[in-house]
Image (cartoon, rainbow, N blue to C red; front, side):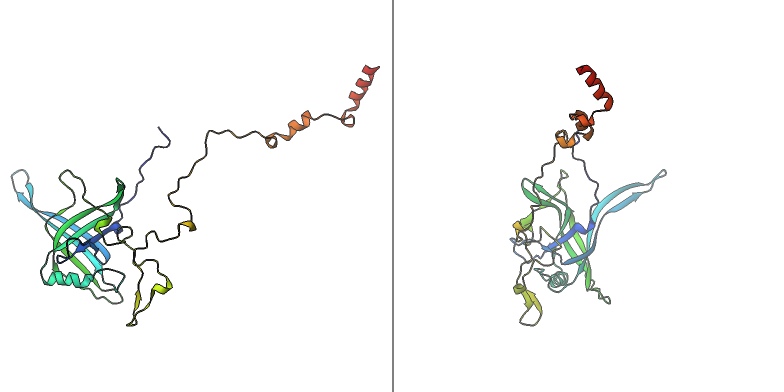
Length: 267
């Protein structure tokens, strides 16, 4: 087996990366979709009418018409650089019984295809039948909205392939970071406005505005060492005892017995 073969890593599908986006029916076709405010917990139901026919041996069951709901806990905030007034839009759609356009985007699936980033998305046309407004103590105002899907939500085509969205389908800056409440802001771009409230002229989209010379590239290619290379030989690696054994001996280092034998031979 190749030691360098890539192996999949077991990782959970994060529910925090499932986000909902919407578009009002009054908006022009050229408008992208907008994030549905600051979102808390969300969920969805997919049910079909169940028909049961009793028999003497067992019940025979079959499914019929489909019913789907998408539930999003929308947290109301002031500003936050959200481009739309979510509270107004939801109330207006509910009051006038309008159809809202809703996208469920799973950012767990973000990937690059043919040089372009895409993410799996589900589209549905929805109605709002109930619009509860929760005003609990010491917490933000929330609207736990149940979106009733008209027809069937479209998540896969008839070949089982997921539908996708790209950067051009979202508001500027939303595709790269869906939890970015604000962009990097200089002191001269934020402060009290004419009415005394905190305001800013900085954009939420601060992608690519950092100093590329201030650090090393995140995607730089590293070269590994050769695991089969042998260590170089040097005098420093030679044992000290071998140097002693090969060193020439002086007369003072010669044993007495050896000196006597050498004198006898000379005579």
